[in-house]
Image 1: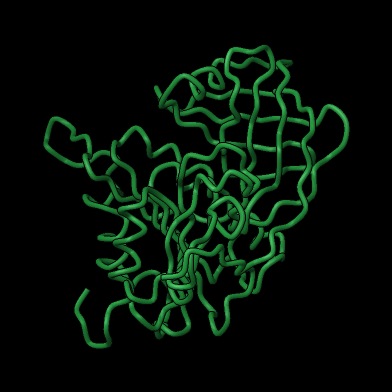
Image 2 (image 1 turned 180 degrees about the vertical axis):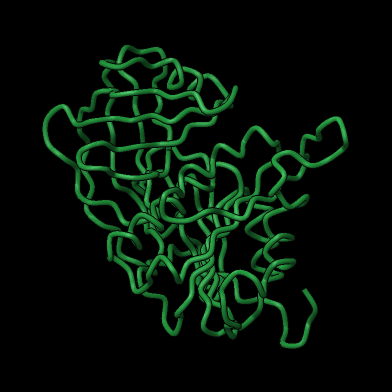
Length: 298
């Protein structure tokens, strides 16, 4: 394994610009939607899967925090924020009119036309719904090689209350929900009733033949995965070897521009920086050793 940085993609230009908070919507006890608008000029268009580094003004938190863009609707940039510590708690407490700075768009996103793929499966785990919602928005806007009818969405959540994340994919698609620890009503039935009890990957395999109206060979399917690292690794290991699989990796990031190299991961093509060559990496290019052998059961 070489120790050099592998420049396997070319990230887009980025800018550091002042923004205002337009709205903050609480989705669950620890999850909010943050809508922001530029105070001056717009940043460059973001590719689905790219992210922004958010810096709060006022000195409460001094380091930026990375967040994938959910959608850009006109001038409104929307982010999904899960509260996990001091920085994200401060962001969740923002109010309309508060100022912040956005650095981005950063990194390399999902491919808009994966070679040979005519169908697309979006496999989301929790707030991994954010970058995949941006993919679906790009599909609906005609910016990819797919139509909305080509796309199937599976959303995995840990608790039933997180089913509200499905709204990020509407009105373009209705996700298949998978709940790891579902709530149950007085009769013991899973809530919500349409949910699959298990992980997103379990649901995808259980309903594989139902994702599209007609059977699709794996070599004609692209799978975009976003969620915790164990989910991405499981998807790389279990999804058919012939499918083109791409994963959006999560990692703590300091600079977000590749200078500090604090988010480097080892891959088959050398060490890559998740903030520059990632966060989206390809199983075929970066982790071919994780793909199942032909004939292996999932």
